[in-house]
Image (cartoon, rainbow, N blue to C red; front, side, top):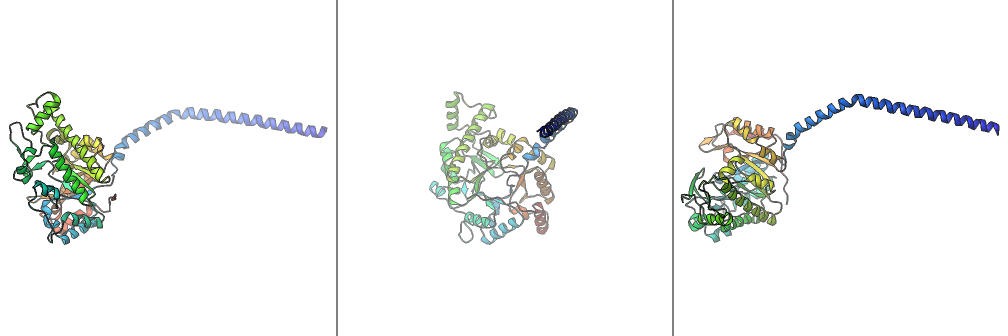
Length: 421
């Protein structure tokens, strides 16, 4: 009994001693850590501050990560010799795919006429002819079929928007659909020559454009629809009888004599925006996955001079893709325009690119200029779309082989865009 007690008592003392030592050890460790952390606290604060600065400075780079990088080309009426021939279309699509392009924007609305068989246009009496292929085929359907086989998207392009020549059947058959300037004149000069402007505030005009767009996205297996800088109205217009009455009714004032009056500009821009919202909803109801693409001029010009508040459209989430036309031969001016805040804002949410001029029939663009602009866009995480297909290779300053080699080097690796059925 005594021996066992002494043994247990000894064990108890050892346990107590060990416990005391562990307690002292833990206390010592905790105090040591506290002293260490206290000495490191200024360094931790400094590291945190530097980290915040670095993360903040990297924010633009994060915003510039491409979302489905756009590598596109517009196909205009100047490209009709290619579009009407099945073999040429096949060669064109194969070549674009080989050079790692991913999107084609074919014109479907130009000069008051559609570029496809349209029952709507025929009923309206504005299509005395139909653009057909060399063997009588539907050129838009053929292009879409061949492009999809190669994995390219096709987004039909409503090039003329609210614009139409005064000699078109549209202008002659529906004169009350068109707006005018304060002095009563109805035309303006554009890159397409003398044109008139459909009244974007008139219900019949809105319905007509909406029906054409819906016809296109319903009749064809297209990947979306695109509207450019002509889905707008020059600021001098809007003094027609219908618009004056509407403005007077809503504001209790007559339209200002100054066409650039801020309130008058905003009222008309907001009306166009409201129509674009309705148009987007109509397209999405018909084809929910259709890409609603816009290709305007840079924002300050678009809003002030063409009442086109595309930044507002984007912020209302009706724009799925943005391509800003930056046709500047001077690299410094080009870079300044593609670096604008509104483009950086767009990059954070949707695929964003810039329109680059590759030449006109009477004004070829050197390959070096094209290369430098593409590189500048790529460095900022922007896609590109070229205006227009034929000028990629033809009517150029360089030989055909030099020109094609130049474009092959622009996109060394594929960047296919996923189709959403």
